[in-house]
Image (cartoon, rainbow, N blue to C red; front, side, top):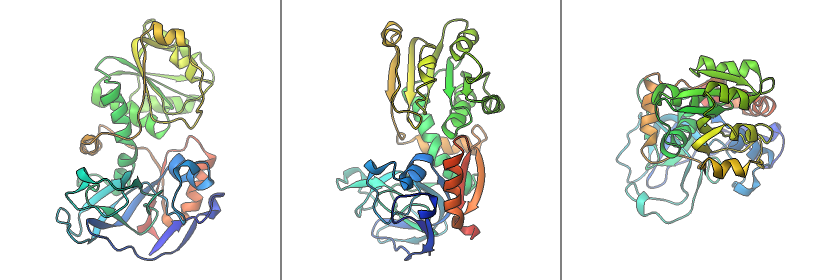
Length: 347
């Protein structure tokens, strides 16, 4: 098969498109013919650059922390899938063999695909059958890969952790980013909240209006705190949803959180160190909660929301796998770029 992989850290051109042995599923695994894998700013691009060495990727590393495609080979003991099933997989999973019914009792090492075990930047990838999920018929592979990567994280933050309610005010940071764009749609289309979105330019902030936000703020030219208070009648927002940790902007946004407000986050690529007003924190009884990933049971709901049009993922480009290095270059040099999806079937 062909795969895009790196043998050492460095610039995008260390990511080589080359021949690699076809994987064969072990007991309890299925092999997926990959039709889509997303390019992620931290878990792919920063990892390849050497800025995520704490994750200790297994070298040579085939990145790609998610994938969507068709089951094309089944390992011993697998009964829940058949060849031709339309599926997706992502995230942290067992590294050793695990029986199809053994995930709950598995105590061996775990790791993220694309970091500790081969990822989706390949024509084929083997995954434990227990973590593979079915796709709705009316959701494309490209959409499904983006949904699997980002939507459950946004859902977990807004629904499970912040417990955002209908008609509450939420401030979505990074309106044009992937988690920001999805957060706007979950808040507005699924929950029925009132949404303020913000970004570092007028054009990027206004993208949030197109996705359903009630108010869009360009923090490069507007006073973010003043605009929050204007929109909420001086009350402040109930929820601040941030996945950037911009040290210049987040302190101002934090002061826009109202009484019993909640700040939720699963990212810090703009930080990570941010100064906040602790008087405001305790005086307004604010909860701060960080949580990567999602909860069991969230993904089917997220797939359904995408399939019925409540959530539309933002895909900037679909490129063949052979252009993986170019995709890394694009993401590295345009922080506001929408999602790039690699499709090995285009080569």
